[in-house]
Image (cartoon, rainbow, N blue to C red; front, side, top):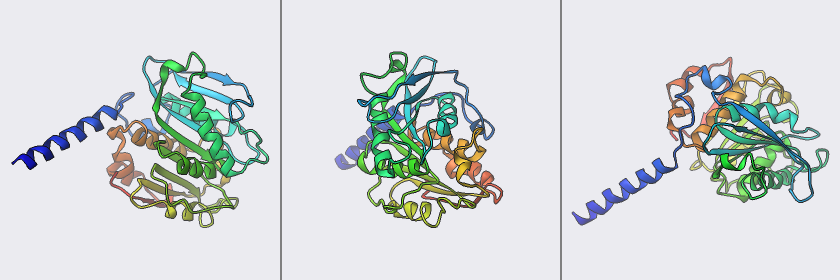
Length: 286
């Protein structure tokens, strides 16, 4: 009997801890709402490049409504700047996240591994004492994620490998000729690739990267029908990229279970058509 009481107490404690970390920002989602801008009004703050930052500056987007929000750093790819990921940073902000569309220190030469370090530096800045005063009251530094395109997507894998406290990663068309195996990642990771991407073909990069992540880690892989390398950085953004970018952050940064069926349920099944995906894999249920 005493053993049963202990087990019940532990179960209740776990439930309370889980509930304490779950955040519901905004109204209940619909399939239409996750495809579009969210309900939050936003503002932005420019971050000037400085050698002390550890990354090349960028732009912060944040909800203006009172409250604290999870944090997402977004890294561009080879030769690209913050403008290539700004649309997704803005979309996430309207759904209740503080985001930074970052520049790298050297867009031409920074490797994926270096971009991983810069992604972590951007998170450190955004959640630290030197963050802009207007942004600080809105930041929950315990809930963080890293997103990236191309070499920036490759950088996501390094950031997640180095910092296990990051809640989620979202590499888009990841590119990295140096390494495609990341078997120690424990953060929830969704890999997006395109059927028509000849720059970072799924079979060369995205697929082996995804497969290398342990099956015990929450993960998903989407091969977008007709998508090319620039699909993930085009503005306005592709519906599928915006949709799953929001869903992944809501599920794993906010732990908002109102979004679960869009990743592992009837809503996901309805959306998972050949017009959207040539392949969709996951370790559901989450």
